[in-house]
Length: 104
Image 1 (cartoon, rainbow, N blue to C red):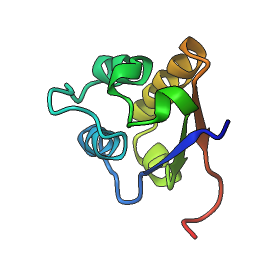
Image 2 (cartoon, one colour):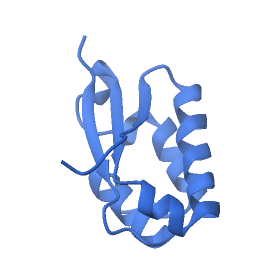
Image 3 (cartoon, rainbow, N blue to C red):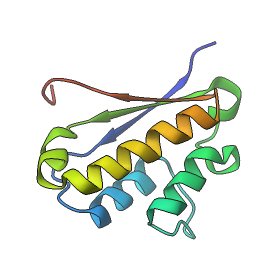
């Protein structure tokens, strides 16, 4: 079985609001997504809001270009990393990978 791959590209993201908007767009989250840490954790753990096909296949989220955001907002990035990690620990159908290297 091949996982559904979603790229979460954080290029140009400088704050939590930008991160939440990018997550909502990349993960095709519903309009009622609350754009806060709890809402992100809930969405990552709730298969019913995952992109179509992800429940059957599993979901791999590849986070790219995260280093500038992590450097500029280390506290926020620590929270984001914890949210991703806890969600992946909560469900075996979810994998979150941090891409290393440039944007190419």
